[in-house]
Length: 371
Image (tube, rainbow, N blue to C red; front, side, top):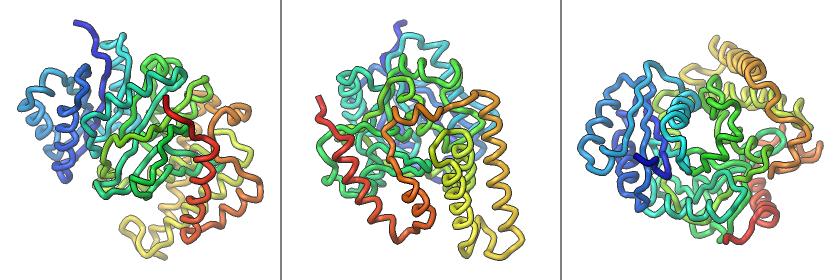
């Protein structure tokens, strides 16, 4: 049997509390007008009945039943580990596939989205991956239209919380395309992968994945592109909200990035990371503990120590991921030393003004007419 042109990777972990969104996501795959695909579902060791719920739904779907491969893991390997399992499966079973699609189980795809994304991907020869406009929870607001990072490794989701009709009618070279819903060239991914069998660093678990993929794409001569076509509605990190781990993995990965990726301002990046940890630790409640409790110092220390351990493990396995000279190849938000120092003292009240300034710069610097 010939390989499909596209393989969609879709992860699940203990999703019974968000079953309506999860099943809507699966149905949106069945409703795609692009039908030359297979679906790989990776269950991360779910124990809440969601695995059985999803299997039952697949069996009842005449479209999905014949296209789906279900991989069951005995434990939770996170976003990075589970995608690596799917990646290795694809390498062995689908060697002639053309496109790899990442779709979160809390994202609901538009019917024509996969066709639209693949069509544009094929018109841009050096594009590794593409993403359309991702709507935030059917609110009429933008969740993601590609993302940029600055030299402190902060993430700026382009057009975040702007109205859908405000999205410019251009394509943009972005630092990376978030993994909620993105499409990649298989051959490009094979060339940029950290190792042949590692699409992402498994040790990271989460939040050191799609951004790293973007960096590796540019270092290897490819680009990441966002296109002005609505692709999906995203219910944003529901799995991590249910499990209560989003904050921990975000801080841990930020510390690891600051230690493993080259930047002119690495000391400032580390200071920014420590400031972020303090801000997360000092509100009234910290993941169930109150300010001033004995838990706060322990949580702070765990975030820092685990980030350092992750950085050390990544360096041992992959060596230098991003060299200083490679930074110029990446569409990043460049900063002066003064700006990097001032950003350490920038708090939420300044964020909207900062985002507006950044978006004006991006539209001028990185936008181009789609073919």
